[in-house]
Amino acid sequence: MSDFFLNKEVDAYGRQNGKRHPKHSSKGGPFTERRILPEQEYIKHEPEYRCKGKNNQKKKKVKALMIAGVAASFVSGITEPMEFSFMFIAPMLFLFHSIMGGISFMLMSVLGVIVGNTGGGIIDFFIWGVFQPGSHWYWIPIVGVFYAVIYYVVFKWYLSRKNISIDVAADEEEDDATGLSVDEKMKNLATTIIDGLGGFDNIEVVNNCISRLRVDVKDMSIVNEEELKKTGCLGIVKPSESHIQVIYGPKVEKIADAVRAVLKY
Image (tube, rainbow, N blue to C red; front, side):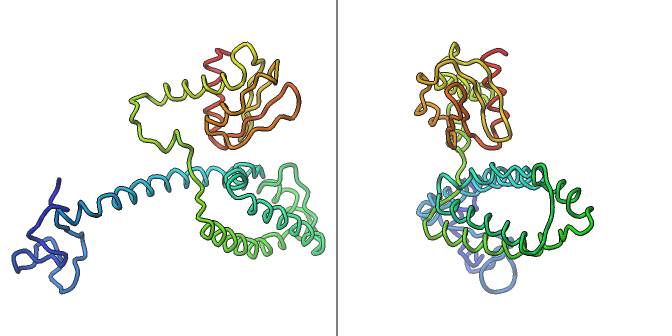
């Protein structure tokens, strides 16, 4: 272990045997570059340091997922990746989101905004709004600024008050203690999904959209939802007796490819 934590002769102010340590500032007061702790102090706070490191790694993964979801929503108007990130862990926020969405449409109508769309993304905003005379498109970013502030305050308050965190799936969070490669893990995950869908013989077609694994099955009665939930899905939808949609969010593309690879088609 490095002297970063174990140098017992250097105190928290950078003094070594009564003299200032050369690695620290010559000015008085606490060090400015790094903190050198006695061994006992490090052992005492070791769980705290490890927890902070793990949380930082988790934040990076969640940040990557959020960026992907925001990009998809901004460009294409498909908001599912963002909504699925909180609707199951904080249903009240989704209710708030639904009400605010309705109010936004009412405000646009009152303000005379006329912007057609095919998906609702930034491309539609320019084609059917900015480039169309008399669309009053400028009200959208103006109202959007107020909406952004309201959403930020409400979400931060609610998530902090309820101590809720938008987490990554267990299979992404855990360290690679099993020694399995990424391909092997995806293959195992795909096999579990196939078992949850009733097995190889029960699956007819496997497709996916930006957030859902869409599967046509022969017999819906043998689909095991509990098994599917163990794979880290965010929800399950059954639009018909022969079609099931398993919601995974932005990572669904990799999952769908793995399932098709195991099925060999």
